[in-house]
Length: 132
Image (tube, rainbow, N blue to C red):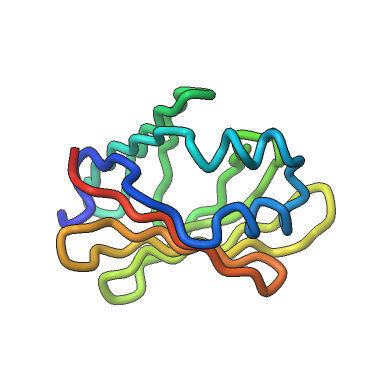
């Protein structure tokens, strides 16, 4: 499918402000902005396997569209939620376990890039990935 493949971080927009809104400390924000993230996505019908490899951790996440699952961010923030497919866009709605606030995430292919958009407490950030 369109998302399948390996994607390497190319650039960020407003990512440090987003991490600040999420309550991530300055040192982790500085490191997070340069995490060399690489994402490998495999789709099999409604099931996805996503491997994230960065300077900080390597994890594998499996999820089925529309089915809630637990997820921890690199800083340890725990979330619960699900991904759905709206047109050609993956839409994630996750609730933080510590404060009940909602994080929205979007993944879409724009041209030859994978664009991840995050929205939390009115702060929007984008991360752009190239096939790698």
